[in-house]
Image 1: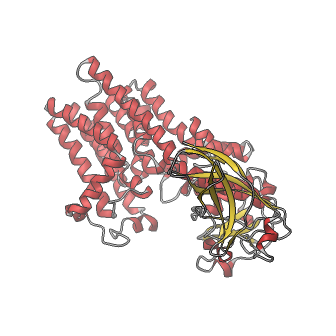
Image 2: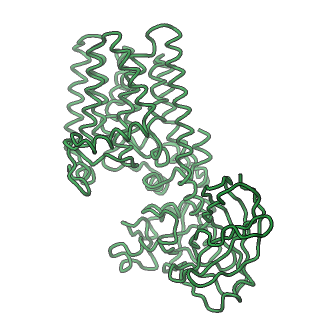
Length: 561
């Protein structure tokens, strides 16, 4: 919850910004490709818009909405169903296997996994014999099935496992089987063009086929994903298998291993999935449910009390470890978000509301940059709203020809008119896009240098031989801006000297200036630290690549460990 509040901006990354913006802008649920489960996380921000809460509060509610979804399912399992194992499973499914996914949380496939836990918990508790709980269980099943085609496997495993524990119960098992088939054919019949494109069995560079798993190099890469990124999940699976073997639970073991192998085949049949990426992380996410499901229901609750306590403790320790891993994994995204925030703050001081930054100067730009800039800027009030896009957005297909003063780039693939914006939160002016990287050097460097200063505001950890980020403030008292366009070849760099003034490093690493600097600008620069520990003098500077240094004079005494 705390991470969700503090890092709410970082969690508007990519798809998350797209869905959340639509929900705020229309003040209603935004669902695409039939993934109705996504609406569950939009309840809080939509209520916030109805109450006319400030946009910052609404964005925080958007981030919290995901956590409340998981927490609500946890509470139902723990208190209403008295199923502690299901509650543990909810916690584990939420955090294990989510690194990139945490920062772009509008991922229905993860929601479906948690609802599959809820579905089985109601089923095994026999509360489904009460009509209210039966309806609730079927709703959870439907949302889980419609969340993603892979999640039909999770529902099937739950039904099969219940059958193995209780024998065939015609009333419920037959009904659930028919309901599952209805859902399956409904899913196929309502496939969107987007979903068809992702299931066309063709990889980007080579054909996608499950037969790739028979290739030793490919298989080693897939196994490497799990040993490097899911080693905790592998440990839980190993323990679950051992318990099932010791207790001679051969049928349960067959369902466990069979479902895992089937899912691996399915994923690799649909896509080349032998490297770790945000998309492959989502495709492999149902494996988290399968492993956790068999761990909690085959390990926890069986054996000696001490062993049972150890299993619970192990699962909780893994969950805590994962939370820390998620946070650390988000460091590049925090840098990116801070960069975009600073750029928005800088441009808000200029006249106008529509700006273009050269994609080569932007930090890790994506197609969602225009949406994120709208959200970040409007936090300061609708009058401060900006459309900040990159040259890649501007040059995409026919955008340059279609754009007029009365429309704007919502995202690279969409041009919208001002009437599209909800005037409660957003407002843009009728004008053309203004480029932020057009300045040129108009006088000798030495004349520029006398009126330029670089302040060191914050440095990262200072460990010898390491690379770190320094936050600096470039102050320009010249009438002419400091140029940032790549063609000008002006970069931020630095020199290192020892305490006595002896030169240690003259040619520091180059960092691009993000925008033309008129008065002052905050940005981060990349710094390679000295090879040895000690006390050093750090001197930030500007350089025209291949020509000359500005020879700025601000010096900072730093200790490198």
